[in-house]
Length: 417
Image (tube, rainbow, N blue to C red; front, side):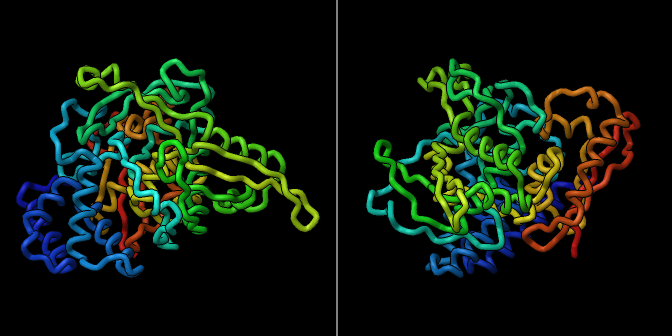
């Protein structure tokens, strides 16, 4: 990967700032835009402009500059990028010095319930041609589908009160002393994406939780609809049961963040926090055209619902939902925010040894050998190559020999069509 000097970075930032000013018509905001480009990176600034365009087309924006400034401020705040981190990152950033994509991380800054009168108001729909990927969800949440453990501990980053903290996350428990409930895998990720896509398309109004007063997203669907969204087509009884179990897993299992183990948070009185994707999954048997069918009603958790309703998301191509391979999906989730920031055909490269922890892969025998690392990652590339990005470019990735003869490099880019 070719390093770019500081003058080159500044020139790129100035160029993008001019592009943003042309979009917003707010010349007086130049310094603000330069700051947000530095904090968020060019890719997310461009995604913010895309979000404004979408809302504008739907009639939800009266002042383009003011709305854009609010989106940029909120996105920077959600990542704690306007604050100085009090602890170092869990893993060194593997993408070098010239482009540092803001990490996806859980945010536990509390949500205030909205006025009760908004609970039945339909939300402005998302674009039909993209998938809303929640910013706070990352590869740390999901293991590979062959995972046998019922719970484990991994390191991750979270945001609390606007600051980034490195913490231990228990996967598979909804409390420090909770029973082991099972670790979510990449297949759970696919099922989750399918449920979100169905909810997005139907666009039902949120309901109000009677206890917390938070808005809850809920949608009614079927296992067959979930399978269709995942690109599985017609499924048999075994697949039907498997997908139904994955839906139930997303409600019954979750994550615990051990905030009490972080001295700075413990001193401020913070306790452990837990999270789950679904709050509840109800099943009801009905007869349709003489055939018995199971209807599934999915209630997203209050926090995940708020992330969706408050659009704490970035757009991803719908093709993301069709990726089958475990490593291919994790690789896509990792690479996309890095590559979307780069110019067309500009390379990003990383040694395979460093890619393994970057994807959150648990230790396995093939990690130890250069040739086996190459073989396993090469298996994932056919699913990624040719996939589109939201700006019309396409994925192109390969495994090459770099300067370090002890390892191979993954070299990836978004090519102009």
